[in-house]
Length: 394
Image 1: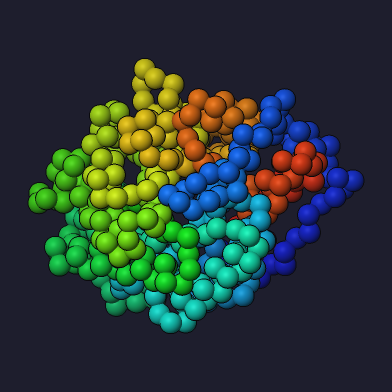
Image 2 (image 1 turned 90 degrees about the vertical axis):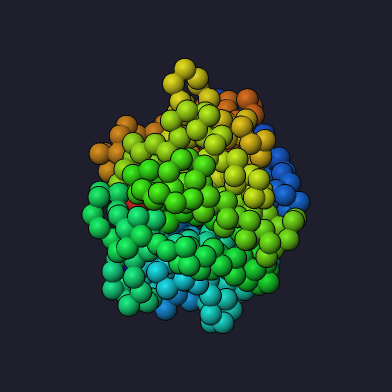
């Protein structure tokens, strides 16, 4: 997402909204009752007011990697309306983790003080919040800030397109990455966050180890699915060792990757079980299942979604996400058919027990009070997703 200093737009009144917008808003409920999504939920001992989770979205509004008062206000505006907020991705304390000095980092006294103010603002508004801890891996651009001299780190020195990206990570470098996630988790607990999320999705470092296209290692961190899951499990175990047995640890994973929407890591339910079991054994609390279309079946011969399979195989709570409350593609028509605004499929899957929590991304980017207006039937007041909001802190 690009950076902009555009002012925050005011929410349009029903009188000024177009008839097409009003019609679109009315399709959200589509004759269904969303009340089940407004029941409380205990997330590894943390009480959430409802089942809605703000999904992480990169904002690039933290100059020098430090979240300021505007970032705190951005999250606080959403806090009272959501069960949980997952922050934008934040760089762990490893020199190869990031590629922008406007993305927040999760190390250094200045950045951690900024995050403490974010936590205080969210808690003051009655919300719950966890940071997403992130390492880009081979996606990082060589020479980019915040550490331009750092090498690009990846499982096999390759990007998804086969281009060379540095050298394969040594075991010492892998150990340093694991330690950086553990330190960040300890700092998250110290500054008052309600848990942590580990970013193991979308083709970034932890996911690069999962995926055979980017992980061609012949040691214990590659080869079989179990080997490719090893780093993720070791990160979870190290984090668990720092934060204790009762602190919520969320792990986000996906089949799809940025620019590779048809990518598949787990071909079958058995593969998925092989991939996720080490994470469960290592102590993960919740699995955040990132899909582009939350309702689509995960595998042939079954209507069950990826979130549904994840919950069935692991027994853990799951977060389902992917085009909830929006009807346009994220980047363009090349991504496939647009979604439906109707929440009827979501409520049906929730009633079937396929997931416990619902991730909202672009819907709450443009409308902080999306869930409250949904609950109160104020559908005509919902500000629809506007792509321009990706460049500003609405």
